[in-house]
Image (cartoon, rainbow, N blue to C red; front, top):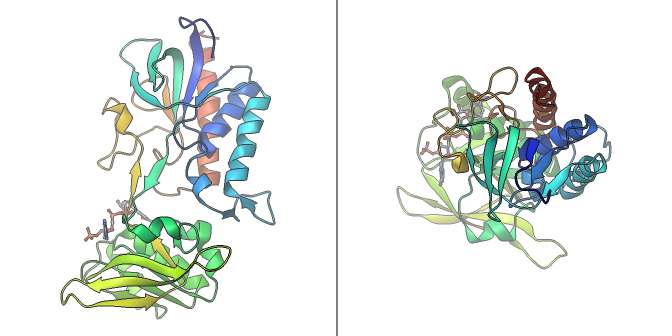
Length: 319
Ligand code: NAP
């Protein structure tokens, strides 16, 4: 960071997933000297997955943390400044904008791109950590391919759960759809599709109490879920190779304290130029997109936001 705290930065990127790094690559290559505040989880959600098999350009797949580290290196190569702190608050009432960093610094910037992503909600079970990425997952498109011909469970009853179950049914032999109630919350068409699918077996009125498996090998391996029917209190072990938790995501917008417009679930609302309701403040990736939620789409939104920031700074005569 510059020694001069009064210096106004062209653009601060908040967050370091695929959208943040992509925006940084484009903006640094445009000589706009972006600053990335990398946050608590440098690299974002992809650092919690093992193999990424659907990011184009890697026919053999790519280790998630390595892919993110490469994006960071690429952004730095062109002059991106990276600060390994969180942004705790932003003030957009006057221009330049002010950002407050976790370390106490105040940064002034002409433009901001929010790339803070979303976090999948978890069940809070002890086994979630033990078997994370080894039978406990939150993204079927990312990790379903590891369970071809196997038996898996999806937890949840909304559109995400039905979408995950339908996707997994194409790859696996059997999918249990475990829901805590006896009817799905999902839209009618998605619910009907799931209930008609012969590979998907709903497990109603049931909660998962823990994940069990084999810890004797090099890596943990999930073998079953401890489930309980909440109507009759009967508990049993359900043999599965993996569990996909699909009980929703939480967009990481809390630090914005309501100053930018969101939908009812907290996702930022952006226009076609990735701009939020505040001119000069942009968003990219899962923090606004709850539909596609892929690394490649997040990267695409990051690119779009960067190009729009470049246009904005030029239009306003700020660079
Ligand atoms: P959601 O609609 O909030 O559904 C979450 C589901 O998880 C609910 O069935 C809920 O049970 C269950 N659940 C929540 N916490 C739980 C817990 N601790 N233990 C067990 N079950 C739990 O979330 P979503 O499915 O992710 O959808 C979010 C939004 O994105 C929705 O607006 C949805 O329409 C949209 N979306 C759309 C598509 C699409 O159109 N292709 C795909 C995905 C998502 P209860 O039902 O009992 O509350």
